[in-house]
Length: 304
Image (cartoon, rainbow, N blue to C red; front, side):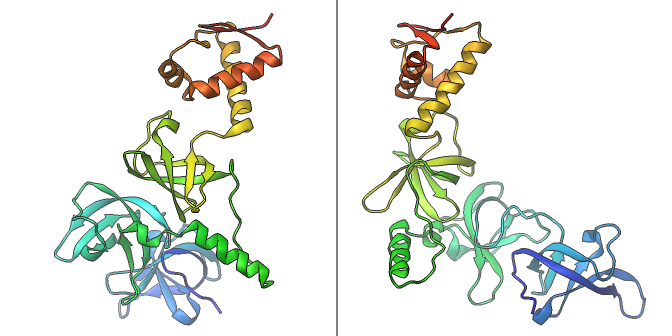
């Protein structure tokens, strides 16, 4: 039996053409929603050439009258995801956010940290409202983040009891997906893999970063309390090897010479290569051991 997931993509079969009563005017297609009955896909969303019996991939949400509607529009985020969305308008009940489909996403006042303003963007979590089952947004994202240590302990207990688990513990150096959450005195809070909170420290940021950015990152530290630290660059040996390759390419593209060396200012290194001086020196050392470069106080040159 088909089970519709609101706020997500569903693969549904075209059941019949939708006609207006009396006029016989076509206005869309009815899709087979299983136990949820027929789901309308208005004509403006129907892909050209779609016929009865075809299977179409559609996004399903509730319209103003709480009826499920299918669309081929591409939302900026799905249910159970965090997203960076712009406030389109407000009324006496809350704010409405543009999330890429015709009906804006409602964020009630109770789910706002401070009153949202038209034109500004906010990190929110999309979820079904427990009372109405409508999709709503919440700016109180910390309520929807998981605790890594708790997930780790729960998975460990399940394994001891012989149960299967989908949990895969992180290792330092693992690549992860990051959503930049907010600036702090220490750096930037991030959301890791749409599930866990983390932080990138200020001294580990070598590029412009802004709330709402989606970036590839790496687990740089797993603290004793389960808190996760991240980096925008690979860590350890991988970081050294990756940047050594970058530096080698730079030398080959710049007549075999780099105007930075062991005594160069760390800010100059950061500005040109977006890495710390420590990483730069390790990479130069790696290339020197391989007899590929000749390092100097203020320069590095390719070996002849």
